[in-house]
Length: 247
Image 1: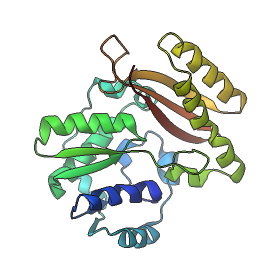
Image 2: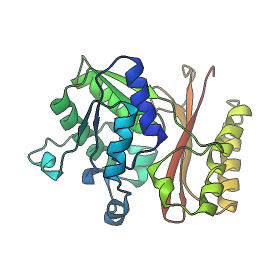
Image 3: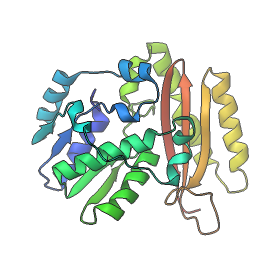
């Protein structure tokens, strides 16, 4: 959606490693915003974005306007959209899949790259593509972070210097859960992390752990767990996650 950072550019780097002709679409999709103020305040920097894309080796930039939404087929996301971010953002993933479906039909990619910071979105798109675009490979690219561990996000630009420093605690708490992990203490660790973040001034929307492949509850067949979090720091919503393997 624009306001590019190193995480977005890493998607291009990954594509170039596979010798792809790289097409980047930039579109601030109103269908996936529940709050008009959030949409209006979303950072915009199209001229800078285009320069960054050129330097990164992007071959084509697709910049549709809202006419792309005319006569668009509305896509209903699967039940996996009703958890995590979907709990507090009803319809968000319907809007995501609706525009992604339109973009896939216009661009007809062979491979599409998505960041794993938006892990729920990645799983929903991957599963949707498997059902409706059988020749399309969806590739997840690891989350890019700053030196303090904060996941790179366009929304970080809306934080003050003090808030940016504070926001690094999100990943620190996730990492503490990972290094102290066992199936018997996950609930305890998650509750401690929520309490720690709340004491620091965060409003925790959720901190949940699920099977990383199905986004269902962890069970005896789970091999990898995704620990996902969403918080508010002031008015700014931030998300992150961490994978725990070899359960």
